[in-house]
Length: 497
Image (spheres, rainbow, N blue to C red):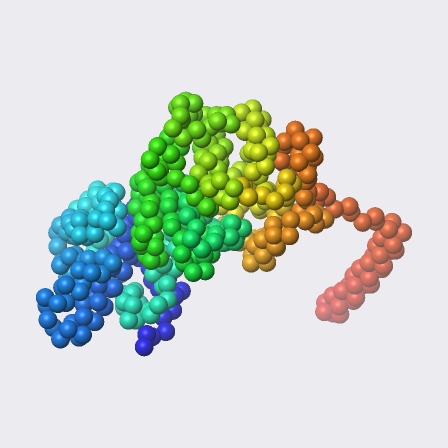
């Protein structure tokens, strides 16, 4: 029977391991070393459990044990486990030893882990000169040797301890990384909201074309009750792509297909000469990305993603949106995308694209979110839901900008805020000061401008002040103040005598 394991304690111990690099390496970089090491520790602990289990079952028969181990979901070559590295932690070339172990793990698991460690170098001068680097790596190894970081399944049971810890670290790295944090992580509460809004069904193909570390994609997949789905993603940053691959593996989503490359200039999720089609497409792409490849978009002939128009070269928002829409299944596909409010009202080519999307009856819901929800930016964002299976030509506007909890560094959605938005989306009705169901003709009359204040009036009329009552209250307060002053004066006279 597995012991009771404290998730927060494991999270704290893993986070403390970052002390080795703080002040030496940028958080956006040292996250890779910590997360790779956590991944290695997990592989080692799972492997250790399997070796012990099969050794008992097969009474030490090495040939049969090895045959059974080769059929596991991954293979850990001899000498590449955490314990072997711990025993070599004092070696003068420990960085090189770690690199070799990671290379061998990749080689032994090409189908699932090829390329995952290619962007990480434990022998890099970024970790300091040789003597300092060796010292830091030794500390790192010893930190992960903490008994509280024993991740063997026989100890932690079927709980998703490792997946939760990985997510915990990624969210903290996003917070520490400033502007870069938003590039690889969507806040958990926003991801939960997106997943519940899109309601993926059993058998769904789910895709995130700007998947970052994969947390949003995982959250959407977890909404499928029977876990019958296929996951796809693409990420342009090599290091973040590797984190996503590891994140998928740690959450037991080994079969997820995650491609490396720019979705806009080099889409990798294709079938034959066409873009793959998905039931649900979700993303939190970088806001208003500059230099996204507008100059080549006009010749995007095989995929015809920009037939409604080419977005401006300095703002890729509608490039991502139109790509996502073009990759959905006809008549049933759904899109959920997080974008800056500018996509709702900017003119030019964006205005023309927006107009056509509304005329095609693809836009279903516009949701305004609170400011300061996302890492790296304080601006408020919006969620746009597109639905190829819409049953009405109306569009629902939800102003959720005032529903949040204020935290130290950023705001967060509460469960009540999430539930209110989800229920409003389902009901698709006008609620005074919160939602508005706008007919197509009204949106057309507004020249297809989707700015939320045009549709949801949140203005509160202030109560009239009763001047006479206020005057009487002031007089009463002045009398009380005069009385208090007189009493204090008496006390002071008594004390001085």
